Length: 133
Length: 133
Image 1 (spheres, rainbow over the protein chains, first blue to last red):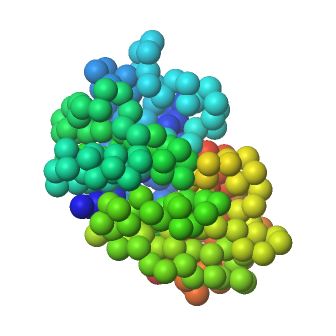
Image 2: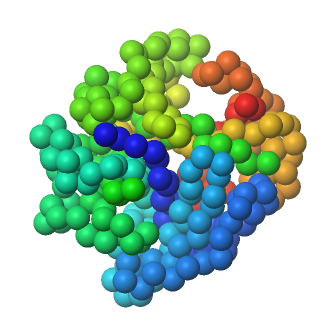
């Protein structure tokens, strides 16, 4: 059921500063992409097997604003796993006690695919996103 | 220079409890492996493209004990990237201002390969390990 690690999301204050070390490391680093509907601007660091997504707050009600207040240097915000069937995956994880955030229904994520988030306390302190691949 | 994401390391108090959700999710989850020389016991969650390493403290002076005091639910401890040449990678990242932890010389990591760690402040609040693949 649990597929590829689609990305590691790292919340940052300053995308250019955060991206610089990955550029220096020779990684494939995208231009910033504003996603106003999601309250973030993203930069993708494409590795041979997965991606790092650097997220900076965009707009007044960014979902990562509070995280950056608590973590002023930035930090890993969530992991995203691919699943074949998001409803089946949700129900399997919920049956194990993992709490789905929000109203429990998938919404359209930053990649235009259905996503759900699970409570960090149910994954060893790690916010988990699942995305229907 | 920057190669595959070798693993995401998540520090946990209780390996069995932390692993249960990954077992339920149908992932390939290893038996616990004590690594006394590194002060941790590890469980590997093998995904199609990378690994999650669950780390629990082992012994009196575990390097993750303090992290777990600050993060009682557990949490992501570090990311490990593969590099072809650890000395060249160290020097490139250091030239960009990334601070190498310890004495700056590679030591043998949990996989028996040369590793180095970089200061989280120089990677957007994320502790970074590089491992010579």
